[in-house]
Length: 107
Length: 120
Image 1 (cartoon, chains in turn blue, red):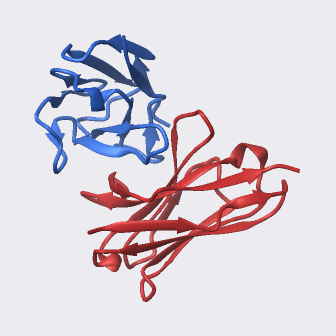
Image 2: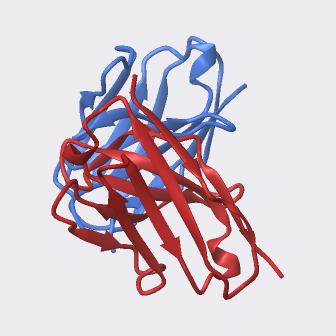
């Protein structure tokens, strides 16, 4: 099973600041990685797929990069609605696995 | 508009069984693989199972293999998860999710979730 490790666990930032979230895989997943956003009481929302492709309707301030074992989700300038938990997920191997999440909170 | 609506959650004793359903609308159901993803209270996401659109291909997480069965009825646009030999660690909100880009690749539409609580 591929283990995805996200860091940091919590990111405390102010609106307008840049957020950089990391996801590291226990073995190469090529570019087969996605990012999701989840707000309290809501289902996750797909943001980025195949490492760097924005899903439909996702604002341009969200971008993804990386390949192999190291990936980054960047939020260029935080909006109030971006404070949430973010998960990475790989589709390289079965079983599909998620990272443990990074919480982006208001400082 | 694509909509997924889960039902069937509730309180069940350890060792018991439960069947979850997910009714899907707004798309050609048989054309898409579907998955179940769960989330224990206050915890992260865990992929549970996937089924292909029409040929019945399935995969399971090791944690549920042999206890859970995923199925679908394309004539009713409905996805199922039959859960048996339930354990306390199966307590979670269960989401159904439409597969995106390929069989079990990613998940672009999700239901609102149904809570399963396994407790004496």
